[in-house]
Length: 250
Image (cartoon, rainbow, N blue to C red):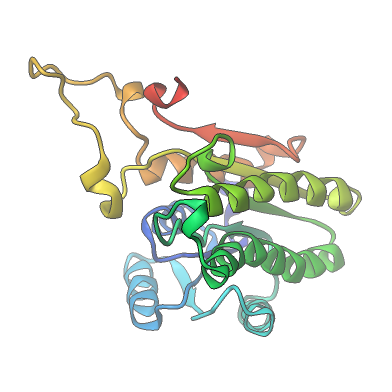
């Protein structure tokens, strides 16, 4: 997508499974990529690998639950690359498995901070830049957990459901500024971290499972994000795009 060449992309959780796939997709399209997460060593190592492959990449270690840290991330992005065109709010995680009656107040607050408050803080800081610059794209990574109940992940599902609603609210507020805001809701995704949870790629008779019956790869999420950042999606805003295996539709 040639229109993304030279665009500035900020990705939170940028060194993780989905985040790194998104970063590589955008970098390969010629975008200038800023990756952010708390793990400084891993983040810089990943950014260096992007640069080794001929991509423009900047690592900015950031706690995206901290408003001041988020402001510094956006300021450094603008200072180094001259703007901010696309924000991808990918940071998040279930953090722990616990039933609601056993959740401690601090655990609830931490889950909301990482999975919801960070999305607002990042969007607010980036949105101000985009408003001044005449437009941009924000892509929030939610989860199918925000669309259906799970007793072991009530904290996570509540936060991810709120991200879906926040997406629609920001799209409504910022449409007049030419800022498109959309949401991708992956189901179980074939990242390294969830390999033990994945169903087999073969049935009991050893036959390959049809591709749509198997969880998507991080690259499938990255492809959808690339589309939502492109000129082809200019009239799409405030929408939710689930991406999951067919068995998850039951």
